[in-house]
Image (cartoon, rainbow, N blue to C red; front, side, top):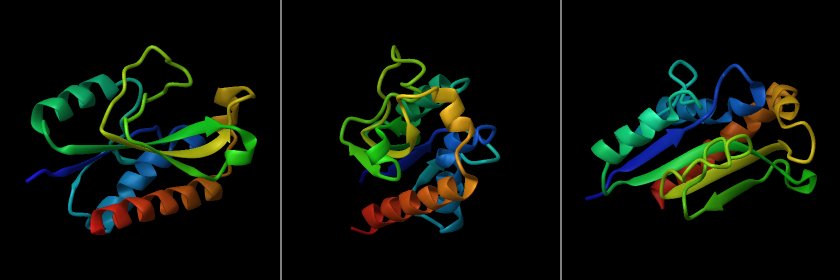
Length: 146
């Protein structure tokens, strides 16, 4: 039997990038029947993503890994959640050379990619990011129950 693993990426230090750890907290508080890595207290960031990716490959080989992260996109897509069946490149907007992580990616579009990307992430409205985190956690929970 394969386990489900959530890898929730982002830093609480930048509002727009805090979506992943917020989702991690929500999944844990709801008692999700899965492994959850990445919370507001213990975030997975660009500084430690490689260690977490190695750990997941080692201890969760054969399990289904869902990676959750905030992303930037077109202005018309802000507020949408995109699904990738190939995992995601964490921090791809800033580190395009990174390799994909996970089997499935849930990417919440929190801002526009055509502007200053860091400024866009820093100036997001916290209530908006929290609502997006709630919607992303709801989507993840529905996937578990399906």
